[in-house]
Length: 337
Image (tube, rainbow, N blue to C red; front, side, top):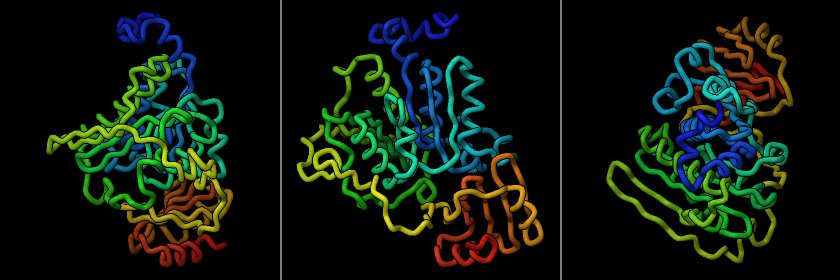
């Protein structure tokens, strides 16, 4: 039965039976189960990856369905966390593989645990802060990192291997991104599919032992305006704090506030508590807001269109503002310290 499932992939000579066996024995981490992440997971599971670990902090909303291929209207109705919704769909696609779903943020506190026993880390995120975190842990732990980004009709991807290529910090300037997001300038789903497919293709090359065919470039494209460019990897930057100086700045504990503006989402995330009892908060907030409880979260909608989304791991999304002071005021008023 397994031979039949993967027969067309096995017929592809660079993979063959030997490569398929390597894929089956491999384990990967996908950080982010949104546009990029759902396509990545779909390809990997259909390819027969042995173990897939997914982490995502968000839940499914209607605007996701245009490009996040593993979700449907029922997931929106039930406000299912993306990691769980993705796992549910993936297990229906391929019940023979192991899928781990983690609801939460990838942070310097949990990233070492998340990358334990994985062969490749794939980027399904939408921000460079998390990408630098993934870059740093991968180069610290000697794990390849499949990077991808997409916005509008533009995309880019690269496959970094510790000790063999420069790292993400060597070829991008921290804080130098445009600030454009899918929520501010939009995105078309074919661009998402192309970037994700590039990420998975390089991953499969690596896992099946076809390293000679790895691209070794940062590829950028715009499929609407018909542009494509490959930048050959430069030599590692000798002052790079990650791959050369081994300082790994994204893995260091910082004194940053626990408020995070989710760019383009009109949302501030506050992660102050280590856990939240959803049953308690469902009851407490029901006297001041319209409350909906799911097995994974509590949503509270207030009269003036301000929403709270509470997660068991202590995170609260304050929806309706990007003003951290306003979000903190609302948080303190209803959640407290």
